[in-house]
Picture 1: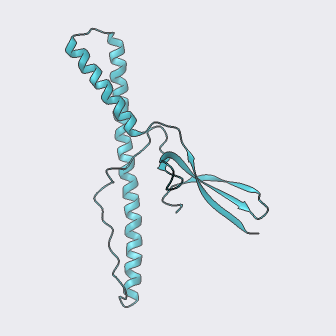
Picture 2: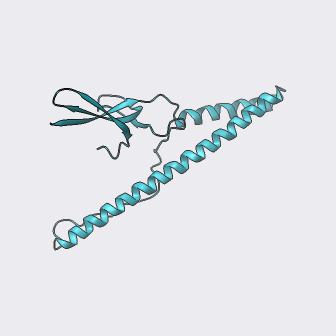
Picture 3: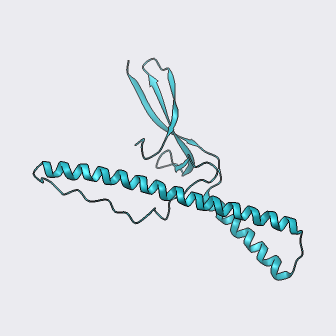
Length: 160
């Protein structure tokens, strides 16, 4: 029985890292203005904001560590793949171009992480669609048209 499998991006609703950065900058600007004008607002509200800011800083640090760990794992996979290609090239009497070693200078500066839903990624459905925070789900359909939902969501890099 033939089965077709296709991937699909499913939208995720969550705040992005840039949104959190913008909100924290806004909060800092308000706090500095209040300090310079000598406003005596509620001390408790200021403490709550300060605590929220510290929590946000901790989330950002965790997101950064997650991005760095993801990069280390991807780089290790690239090194393994390079070593296999290099060995294959040497076994074939060095025919063709020599495989290029992977270059690592740390995570891409444009890498993003979603603080509220780290499993989702920024994707787009096609070249004509805008980018959106989404999951990469897989769906299988048999010859009779029955649909089978696959139980796990895939990393975009692994489903290509």
